[in-house]
Length: 72
Image (cartoon, rainbow, N blue to C red):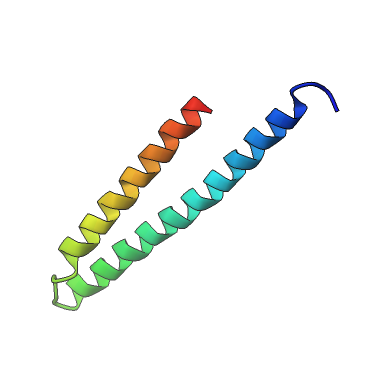
């Protein structure tokens, strides 16, 4: 094993894990968006505000992870 190769492998593993976690978060945001749209079309808008807050929280987590990747 070359010097520094283990560190590169570790970075690549962390990067792939963060990408997979990010994919889950994006899919969750899409699910929230579709649920709110179905509710609005059905005549109710009570779900819009909690879903927007949850979506903003997910966005904040994504930005936090992006900053972490830049530091990696």
